[in-house]
Length: 442
Picture (cartoon, rainbow, N blue to C red):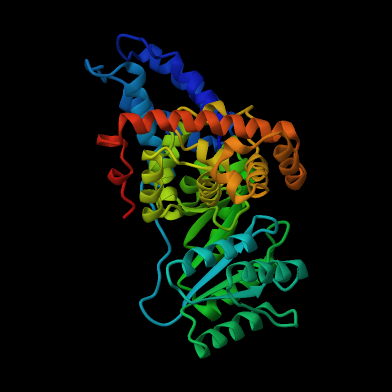
């Protein structure tokens, strides 16, 4: 996410590090470079201009105190401005205390509306909401089928009609939701390849008919300033409540994310950074600002761990580690838990100092699939006692997992090295900050 932007900003900030104090000259030189970086990232010209002016005003005259360097000070100022630019605080959707909460999802075709509708349904279902999805994108048959497939995956019903009348679908879906006591209705509306009057009129009429609690505009962040322009046009016609940025995992530049809040004046509510239904996050401006500056996002990483790791399982694992009995079955459970947290590249990008190094890295999530296949091809005895894995057993495991003997050998060797390391930790003890018991999942 934003690898190009992060790398270029890091390069620009190097020029001011090591200076004794902030002067008009070194500030001007650094900010000139940062302005060029922002424009290269497809940030709106006026947004970039105001951003640089605000930083300049705050940096000039600031003296560097003993505990920090000029580079640290200017980084802090840029961080604060980025946070302000992105919206200052998070803004999740509003849920009605009673009756049906109606959420209208709008946007251009190909922006990821339908997938987002499924992701949002999953998220709200996990919060014990009773969800009904409505397929109001009646002009594209694939959209209805896609929504039904997503609904099946998360066990959420999808309301649809055979006729191509989006207004009727929306009205009948609301009636059905009230009759069957659903407390949340998510309506996936039709999109076009570009903003047109017919689409806007239809969305506006559905809005007036349903009176939704929130309208969420979904936009493809990879389209840069086109995303900002469509967001502005939609807001003028529909006056939506919040923005959803999709495909952030493929956006190396970040122009849309940095411009859209300032240009449109509406909060970014969610970001979608992967294809899995779990790849949806509430948008926190300060966390994204930290990631853009290469400082990672440890808070989000911990939250993902809290959602996917079981406390009792963690305690059981600690006991096995103490006795140096961590085996392939335990390893398999940890892999499955990590996969639930999202893609490897997105997780690594949350670790401070790692994001800027990922630009040319080949991080393949399929590697975990291969490891899973190898372990699952082992017998229970082999998983518990890896030392019995002789040549014949390794050939059988390779055939069963569709991998090579070399792959099996490599995994067994790496696992053996990991066991040795864990044994050393176990001998030193789990006291103090290293104990699992000190890291509770509330």
